[in-house]
Length: 153
Image (cartoon, rainbow, N blue to C red; front, side, top):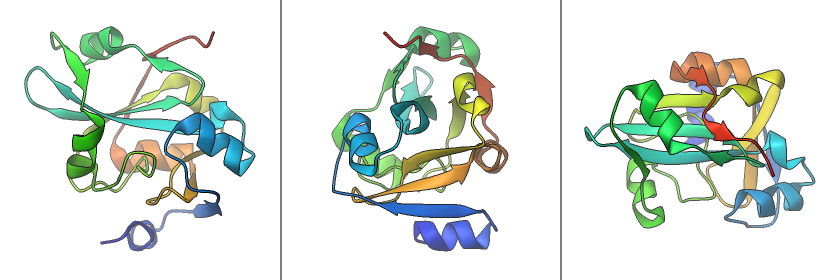
C-alpha cells in the first residue's frame, strides 16, 4: 500500500509539500521553507535484543541513544545503517514518514515535538514532505513520548 492510501484508509488529516529532492533534514527544511525544528528525523534503529524502533526527533536536535536504551530497558540501541533502513521502513532515507512502515516498529517521539499541533516528516519520496497532526502520529503508531534528544547547539 502506498503512503497516501495508508493515510486515507486510516482517516488521517495530511498535506504534502512539494520541494526539491533532498536527503538530509536540514536540506529538506530549507528547500520547503519550513523551520528546522518542525521537520522530523525519522531514524530506524535496532536494540541489542533485535527489536526495530523508529525514533522521531526534531530536525534541529540530535538523538541520544543512551536515553533511548534506558527508556526501552535494553543495554544498547544503534541506528540502522543508511543503506539498510529502507528494507525495514519501506522508504529511502530522506523520504521516511513518521507512520505507515513496511515493518511495524515500536515508536518513540521526542517530547519537544508535542508543543506543535502539526509537524513535517518524509513524504514517501525525497521530493516532498508530509505534514501530519502530532497527535495523529502518536495515536496511530502508539508512540512512547519521552525526552530522547540532546538540546540544540
